[in-house]
Image (cartoon, rainbow, N blue to C red; front, top):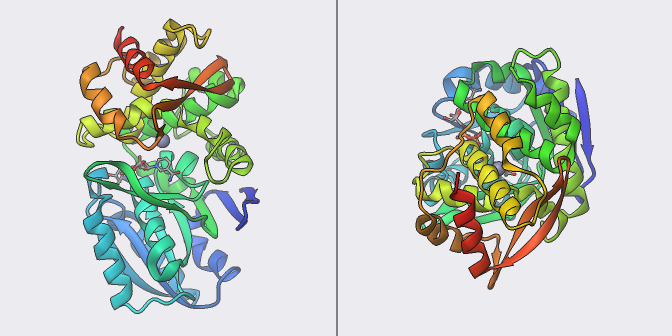
Length: 353
Ligand SMILES: NC(=O)c1ccc[n+]([C@@H]2O[C@H](COP(=O)([O-])OP(=O)(O)OC[C@H]3O[C@@H](n4cnc5c(N)ncnc54)[C@H](O)[C@@H]3O)[C@@H](O)[C@H]2O)c1
Ligand SMILES: [Zn+2]
């Protein structure tokens, strides 16, 4: 088992290994006395892992109130957030109780935001069940829901008390979900670790013997950015690589395109545009060949006008300017600022194949 200690203001451990779901009761008892757990999951994950998790938690002395909502990004919304808060109130959870998120990034974001806001904040634990949530959403304490006006527009920083990345839970993922996680892993390689990028470029499978180590390396990279800028006002924004255009793509597709696929398209567009505007020496072919090998997208199904309108609402914009991540070399990135008219040109160049 691998362990990363994240020494944010409220420090916590991220454990990566096998069969952690079954040990969750004992692991939680090291941190919490017996209490009520608001166990939040979605309609796909519940039939797979809820029963085993719940039994273990109850054996360890916890009592569970289970909230299951329909799976999918479009359900990370105000309606389900409101229903979850009301559920927690009806179940009489108090500030000495905890929230546990069992699922992908959607469950983590929704449950985490409820944990941040219900009764002015409850402790929470994350059990990520997608590759994307394990390598990315599990660290950093960002929680959010989407508003009709845009993605992640209501949210809070609220670090979890513990994260359990159980690699055994990832084996039920489909190809698209694996690709989604791979997009964020390639992002980590591109911005911070040339060797990781080269390793992934050669191929990736959930059957890799060193899956736990690979997830751990991604968590470590993410953790380093989080630690130097917990509130995301400076260098942590480098992690938004591919997301300025990626979030616009998600929004334009009404969330039919998954976050990971949209990020992959966003990375492609941002690399193409930065190269063509001489903001980065990295030629698009580098990423195009890696994406083609992995079955990741190599084109973007929206117009400049559509993406521009969606991007204007993104919270990464500040006033008349937008911050973008540009690669200086593979494994090294910096933030660049564009004004809005330049950003429109940037989008146009990113769409040209
Ligand atoms: N808070 C953060 O730091 C952060 C970071 C990255 C992404 N995100 C957010 O995470 C979301 C994307 O996360 P995601 O890709 O995990 O999406 P997701 O949570 O929607 O999961 C993808 C699909 O996989 C299913 N699923 C989950 N675990 C499974 C398993 N083990 N086996 C089979 N199916 C399973 C889900 O039900 C869903 O249908 C986006 O909303 C994104 O904004 C947040
Ligand atoms: Zn992301």
